[in-house]
Length: 426
Image 1 (tube, helix red, strand yellow):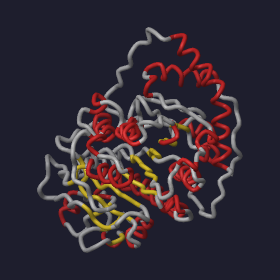
Image 2 (tube, rainbow, N blue to C red; image 1 turned 135 degrees about the vertical axis):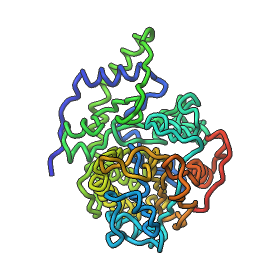
Image 3 (spheres, one colour; image 1 turned 60 degrees about the vertical axis):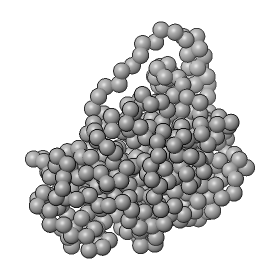
Image 4 (tube, helix red, strand yellow; image 1 turned 120 degrees about the vertical axis):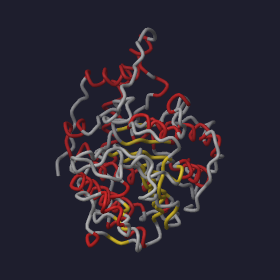
C-alpha cells in the first residue's frame, strides 16, 4: 500500500480552480478540512444521513436486474446477455447480475429496495441534458435554479447556511449539490489519493482541492457555455489567495483524518470503495453531515458491454458490500440510506459493436437498515417498447419525494416544485 503523497499544491492548479470559480462563484463548492466538519453535537439523535451514488454514463438496467424469464431479452441480445445459469435469481422473472452477490445478500436480508423502470416523461438521451434533469428534479434543468440537494439544504436548514450539511467526495461535484445559499463541501477522496497516487487521482477526476467542472460528466453531449469574466477581479484575486493559503492545510487534514480511520472492514482497492470508505469515516465518526455525494464513471457501454459492464458491476458490488457492512457498526451508520442511480438505461437491442446505446429508463437502488426491502414500481415491458427502449414506469422524483419527506421532514413540493407519489420503501 503506497504512502500518502504530501506535495505542495501547484499555483497552476490553484489558479485553474480559482478561474473556474470565477465562472459561477455562487455555485462554487468550498473546500474545508475535517476540523471544520466535525460537529457531532449538531446532529440530533436519530437523524438520518443520505448517500447518493451516481453511476455516470448510463447504467444498463437490463444487465443489472436481468429479466431472465423473458425470452425477448435473449432475442434482442445475442452476445450481451448473460446465460441463465450464470445469474443470481431473485424470482422466476428477475435475477441479479452475477457480479452483484452483495446486492443479493442485502435484498435477501430485507435491506435493499429495487425501484424498477425509473425515468421521466419526454426522456432525453443526452448525458448532459438528462443528468441536468436528474440533478435538479426539473425538466428545465439548470434553468430551474439550484440542484435538488441544494434546494433541500435551503429548505431544511435555511437558517443554518453551514457548508458541512452536504459533502461531495471527488474532484467534480455534481450539479445536484449546488446551492446559491448553502454551498457544499467538495473534496477529493483522501483514501483514493493514498491508494492510487496523485496522477491517478487527477485522471479519475479528483484533486487535492476541488477543481469544479460545470460539466455533468466527461461523456456530456453538449458543450458548456462559459461566461466571459469582466468584473470582480480584485475579489477573485483575494479568493485565489485564500484558496492558496487554505488548500494545502485543509486537504492535508482531510487526507490525514480519513487515512487514520480505523475499521475492521476490508474495502476493495477501487476508486469508488476509496470514496465510500471516506464517507464511512465521516458518518461513523459522528460528523454532522446530512447528505453525501459520490460519483463513479465508466457506464457508457457502447462497445463490448458484457466485459465492461461486468467489471463495473463487480467493482460496484464489492465497494457497496464493504461500505454497508462498515455502516452497520454504528447507530449513525444504521440510520444511513444509500441511493444508487444513473441518468438513463441502455437500449434493449445490442448494436453492431456488442454494446448498447443510450436508453430511457432503468432501476434505482435504495439500501439501508431503515429501508423496507423489496420490489417497487413495475418492470418495463420488453415487447411494448418506446422506439426501441423500455418505457419508464416510475418517475425518479418519487424516490426523491420519499427521502425528502421521510428522512428530512421537508415538504417535497418545496424542493421539487411539484407533487410526486411517495413510495413505501421508507
